[in-house]
Length: 376
Ligand SMILES: Nc1ncnc2c1ncn2[C@@H]1O[C@H](COP(=O)(O)OP(=O)(O)O)[C@@H](O)[C@H]1O
Ligand SMILES: [Mg+2]
Image (cartoon, rainbow, N blue to C red; front, top):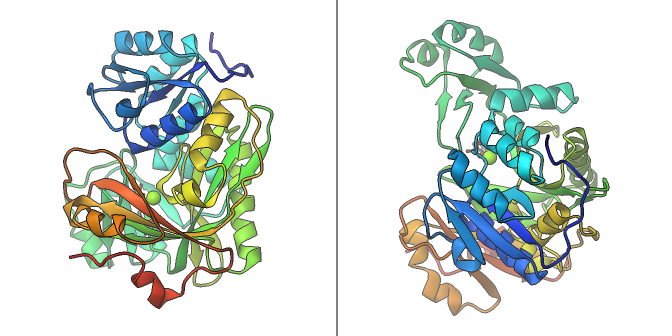
């Protein structure tokens, strides 16, 4: 028996969140705003999310005893951590509703399954091929070069990716971590994303389409809204809504897209949880992505995802960006969000900063550079 009911959980109920990182922290703060209690499942007894939540179960994501104890202390369960096993999720679903349902997570965890499902739903993707072993490498030449090889599971922030420039470079590859997925490198004008949320009654809401820029494989800056023609922004939202409906989403989901040099929109990947490229909503929308997610998961109404301001979001990554915090605190108009992580290792997301502007007044490229104190 699984518990996929349409039950509504009123404020005062306990929302269980699998994962104790910054997405869990900001979801927990949004839940607290609405009067919910939050219970976290996390391997370590302290974490960014645990520090702002009512209680926590410290235990492994695949320990049945920890999962049962966690479920017994929640009314409804969601996740910020995408790599809990399918077995773990189905065990949880025997006890409490899990939203979004485990099936979506199973799809988004595996790049091959994800691409297969999206393609079946008629969503345009970068040309791709599954690579189960060295015997499949030769056939990748059909995709053309450069191409990119990605591990099928556990990749994030560009980890587990290898760019291949030529047939010679391809044939020289050895000891790859199969299975892999190969994609043609897309010549994009820009990267876009859409946060889409769907409720238990099927209501679908979309935040505005935004533009994302990466640095060393990690999201660096989000511009909200994206500086693109309205028809492109709307097409991106229509794609995100279609995916949400096809996958029967309940909760929020990030959809990453490439806006090709030829104008075509191709979906890169989906993440059925709050997403770094939605952090701008915390200061530019009355109801942000985290509150929308909590509302969807608990069955509360979903108001339109309205943006009252334009915004620029800068991620703060590693010790280099933590050194800028004093300057950022002294910067007029900068809204700082820190995740409370004890140690600033290189490449680790430590916080982010939102700067907001009246609608239509997003700064130009030169002014963007000067919004925050420079990196040292
Ligand atoms: N097919 C591609 N063409 C061009 N750039 C790509 C492609 N795939 C990935 N990238 C670049 O690498 C980044 C990370 O890849 P992504 O598949 O989103 O993995 P992750 O799970 O690490 O976010 C993308 O945001 C994009 O900048
Ligand atoms: Mg990505």
